[in-house]
Image 1 (tube, rainbow, N blue to C red):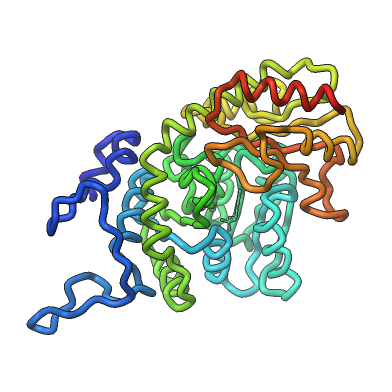
Image 2: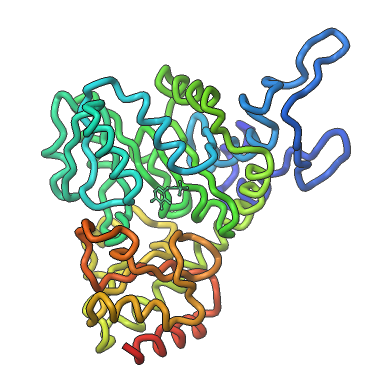
Length: 378
Ligand SMILES: *Cc1c(COP(=O)(O)O)cnc(C)c1O
């Protein structure tokens, strides 16, 4: 698969199953639903691993494809995004300092806070503009997300990597919403890239998966892999097979979602029922200048509406939508709308009037008409 690094990303994704099955000539990859593999007549194993907890041909195929797409030394796929995050956090030295964002994907932030409560780490959570000044000589890990959920502010990956490396810390980037299409954080200096592959990489709202990709294969990376094996958290064969199937159309889906989202941002930017639209592609957005440089592959399909409505009115907007499902998650072919404060609960620092939209690949006029009629009713 190393020869794949020379191919362009659309080709790598579309032909991710190019390793034609030598036994049958099958072009689509066979699904190996087996937990164990028999040894040969000399009692030698036929594969690198012969028990499913250690890996499977379907897992390796999807990992090689994602490593090539992210230009990394290797990828490890897990049975969810959070499983990957938890395994990675286990490699933080005891008592080490972690810098991350006060506003970002809720599940990751609250896991860091739980580790801090157990005195496993010390934690500094800051706004994006304070990242560099929060990094100290004791910092082991800087974990960022860009664009940041659900305000979609854009963080400069190169500048953050430089600040981390100056003190010997590593930078991990939650690149779920960059989708390996907008940019490749490893080429901008990040040490580890994380994806909830549940989202854009799979794209069809039917697989829960997480992936870590490393710039270099080192002792810490080997430990992540050992932890995954021990916990039995490798992505199983069928989910790996489905994820590979989703990846073949990744670029088409991301480009179409980006186009639709930009059209919606432009169409509704002066709408009387909206206070503001948060979207990396708008000149009003925090970090738009960086986004223009850093998201060359598209601004993505994620945006938030700040409505001229209260808590109840914002919930009502979600239920009035017909095409947008009022559901959590993101990055699928179908559009979703979510009132984040309802999901995060009363301790959430998010405004009452924020509705997060995941823009899919539907016809843009249908999406605009649906948003128009829902806004008209609040
Ligand atoms: C969904 C998500 C996660 C968690 O991934 P799961 O696959 O749900 O475990 C982490 N980060 C971001 C940005 C996400 O959207």
